[in-house]
Length: 82
Picture (cartoon, helix red, strand yellow):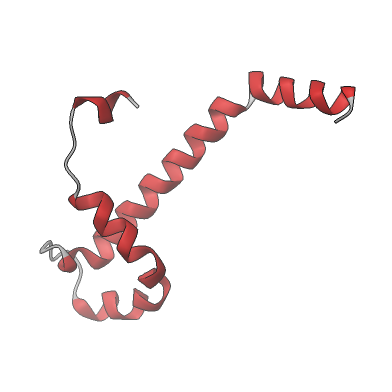
């Protein structure tokens, strides 16, 4: 690794790393909210008619397992701090 590459990574770490992590966390929250609205009937939260849920199902199938695990896991005070 060259000197300039090291300086570039150092500046990125100082300036943009926190913003990048926040953007990724926000994106994940929005995706989980979208799945909750469209597939909420899997957890017993009927929000949309099943017709629209079935139309969106092929796009959501890869994420359903992780979404259900995230929605149903227990939370405590330390989750709010992270």
